[in-house]
Image (cartoon, rainbow, N blue to C red; front, side, top):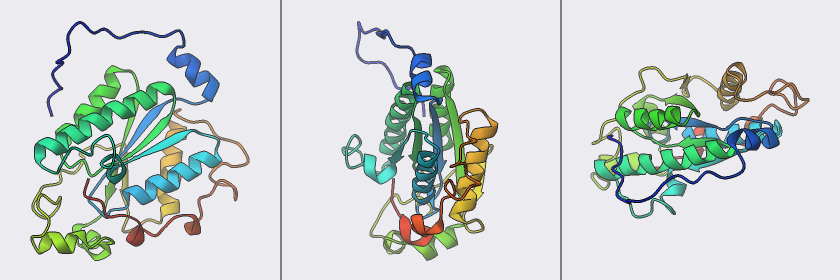
Length: 236
């Protein structure tokens, strides 16, 4: 994905009177983007929802940007052609950057099948001095098809859905993601714990409260989230 061309002219960035540092201080956290990528049905939305809950228990502000949800709003005019997929990711990358600048940890769950598009979102964040954490939600296609909670793979196999990632559109796996989760081997609790540990080790969040992940209050229980096989199946 090449950088979008600036069409509007005679526009400049207007600085406010409250800095990013000010916002980080009042929230007692740093903004960042956690970018979940993987096949439909891999578990992205499930993990994102569980992570949001865990961060909430730690007193950290986060917000989920889910593939299906944004296609019901800001990206409702986009389809699933390669060009529309690229624009979908570009827009969400910009939105996530704004959340990060505001001090929020955005949890972005998108198939985002093309490596070039994900890399462009990473560069966008790096240029703005914002943290970008790519999470490869790795699930074999056979397992994703077995789960198929919305019957989308079955319809794609029958030719009822075109441009479906993994069937008649490619998925380019991340080469060096910050976090690699095998959702056919790990529980949701284990996946969330691995992400929280990464955020702590890399100074994105600070914990140590009674609600830390290892404590009973901070641990996300399996009953609080849907199982991988029941939770998602978007076509984003």
